[in-house]
Image (cartoon, rainbow, N blue to C red; front, side, top):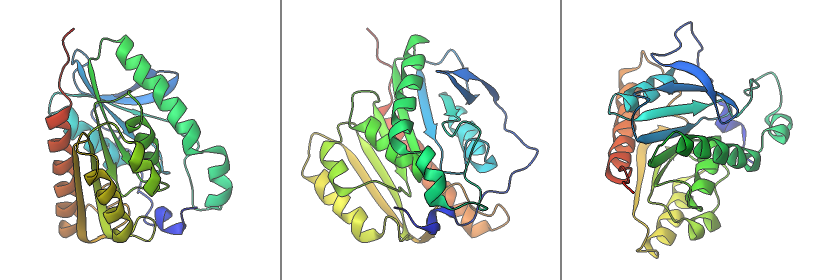
Length: 240
């Protein structure tokens, strides 16, 4: 069970709600950004704080500006984690197993729209959901950012090209665990991989950074670029 570290630095919600819009996709309220005619989609799976977090939506808009149709579903169904309740209680009704089943519905809905290539990026809680997608044939590429709940054995089953962006200061997925992930992936030459541990970064740094802290912003943006580079490399339109 992930400790309270994954719940540190909750995002500061604001009236800003992104450049995209919210619509229904696969049965979920979903923040969408980018050209709806694109044949390439990126699925974001949020951390426990949900799909309304401003930094997450800003990142969705950034990826959308590269030509992708970016979707951020509300897999927490209007009930993101709040610090006034124990995480152990909240997680009982917000398991990653259900998140994976929900994500498959959204992937199916994207394919029904004519999307030919899909990448997925998961943050903290969402990283486990994306790992499960990467073990199936649902997506063309995966990115895990400061993952929670992901186990070493999960890496043995990964099929999709996978990038893991991790923090040096992270009790949930510490560097020694990340290195084990990398070792297993290295034994699977058929699976392209990219593993990077960010010095002095803390769990959640890619979406729960202080926008007034220039160093924190710079480090988050470095991870964002790594994510986008990986998606650009692997999420390519398939023509049938």
